[in-house]
Image 1 (cartoon, rainbow, N blue to C red):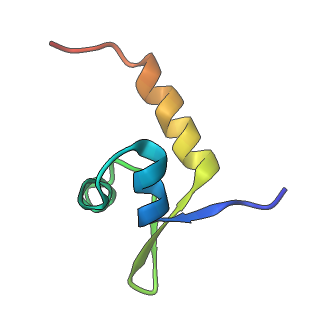
Image 2 (image 1 turned 90 degrees about the horizontal axis):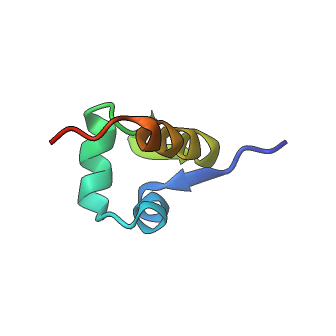
Length: 61
């Protein structure tokens, strides 16, 4: 199965976030990402797993 690699712009569209937020979350290690030749790249399967994990976390108020 071929891995689908996304750019920060594609991730921003996918997650309905700004690109700035995607970069900030990637730099902080919150989003699963890799920096390749000074550009952030994201695997869709890892993002989907990250979303599932976030859905299962209790909401803190």
